[in-house]
Image (cartoon, rainbow, N blue to C red):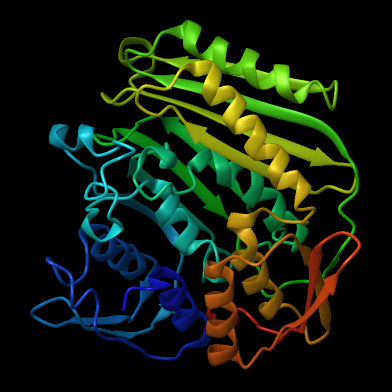
Length: 390
């Protein structure tokens, strides 16, 4: 089926093994691939050379023969909804919350799919997306672009994916820039993502010390028709809960209007909070304003969500576990270790995928004192063959 769709395609390209996916929503009322999944295939076709994609007439079967990652500068339009989709965020409507009926996803969904591939191209990768920037406005609560900017970029740096010093391919470090904001369903946002290439990941990691939380930073963002006072109310409520535990809390308010900032036509109110520890661990959470919810309730809800993430005491966010474990598989042939809070079903599926593709088995050791899990594996010593062949 369509489980782990992006991860299976990314691993197929990295391992250079063909992929066959059958029974894609074969039992659904609308079987086959969704528009956003077809759009992701088009994106992979743009950043690779020689890939072959075959989809059957009903869209329930996909054959993918991976090509060589070329990188370069590309532009991609992500599918968005229409004005009739503005009612699909109703929290109590089971039909509207059915993920199999969703026709569009945020830019963060696409960004998450290519992050495992970004450093291993023939040249530096730069992608300019247009679409929805606030991921949590979608039914599936996709991580937003702000989330990856706060958490994924430090993770890339921890694995040695930094500014390139190659004479032929000089580049700055990984960068995510939000050029223009756009909320669901109509979108209208623009995002620029840049990632330098690496020949191989420098060294295995040993990331087990979570440290102590030393500061909390955040950003409350509103788009189109949302009162500027709402962002201040969200920030005030979140700080009221967090400052009971730590004094260094700062939440910025950011108000975007169509006239001044050329943001998208859909209204939205989103807040992101990031906790930073003394050992460089970064934990990020986010939430958006639901219907019939007060800004004060949103602020308290996202603050409680951050405290829950901190309580899990992992070195990476819950949503970045699979990405971190993927990079661990690609490190040099030595033991890497990583501490996480709890294994999510998504991460468990990813572990099975990595074992099938690379033969990498992770050893799990439970820490009863901290209620965490330490995962260790031996890397494959992956090398950037696209770069090595030039």
